[in-house]
Length: 382
Ligand SMILES: Cc1ncc(COP(=O)(O)O)c(C=O)c1O
Image (cartoon, rainbow, N blue to C red; front, side, top):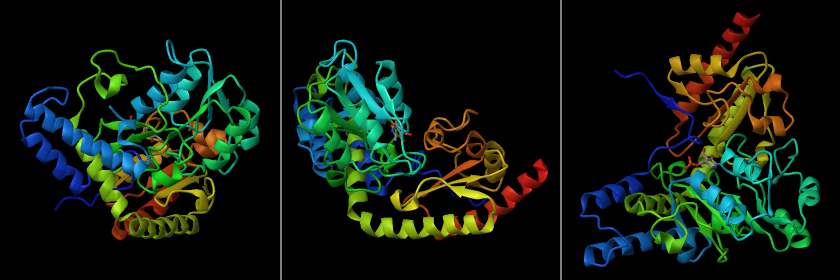
């Protein structure tokens, strides 16, 4: 019999949705056709790609023509920032602004182009006073994520937009909606944004495909030069099977979002409350009421995350310390640091992220295995 496996790292990547898998396999089994071609098979591929564009546009509050398919969330974020303020871009020389808790796919391009990084409140939401200070006529783009990949904190975008209207009315609002797509109706939650980044593998689609949604015809310089695909905004033959599967996954997630959000919020609460009760000196990051339903983020004082993850993996529990991109590196998370969590406390952080495949048995196992693992490490360390 195989060992039980409890996967609680859905914010890193999640299981493919059956509807996405089916759509992708069907696409790959046919003579695919290159969507830029002229003959019937190529035109059919273009039509299926455009159908996917329409579904994704509909679900994100955009016209289909605003959907630029990319190779994932990182590329979509880079296109939004570098495509606006990078070399040769329409607003070259102007500035990008973002909070310090953004994913590195936003933070690094903002910093690379000399942008401004603003602080956040202890609950993880952007410090609106600091944002106001950073906004002026020099700013071309503000980037604020819908939901954070580590803390799970949702950032309401209306107040950000209101500040921009007052202080930087010509700037566009980009939102990294990569972690929001599972949990929120983006046509609503990201309505104030002009640009929006998606990554399919976070919501039941395949890895290596995403989109930048351009809602109001914002002009961007392409990152890749080559063919004129995606209306000259992203060169390279499109990943038709990936795009079709991404659309199927987004539509499938939208259909049962309300019931799944309620189920997973209850499981997350059971997990977080159970661990807080069973393990003394445990600290929950941020304000749970402001988080996406699947996010449980805790710090256990007096232990090192790496050692805990090792013990948990031996028991078949898979989680992460910070975001998937920085776990493995010993540097404590930039997100927790920005939220004012001490370096010492951040060393013992654990991100448990739930997804559609999570069952109550997974939560029972986590509740049975994590408290003794933490106790063991504390005893060993004392
Ligand atoms: C908030 C956020 N933005 C961007 C990305 C990058 O997406 P991708 O893995 O598709 O490059 C991730 C993935 O971890 C993420 O969580």
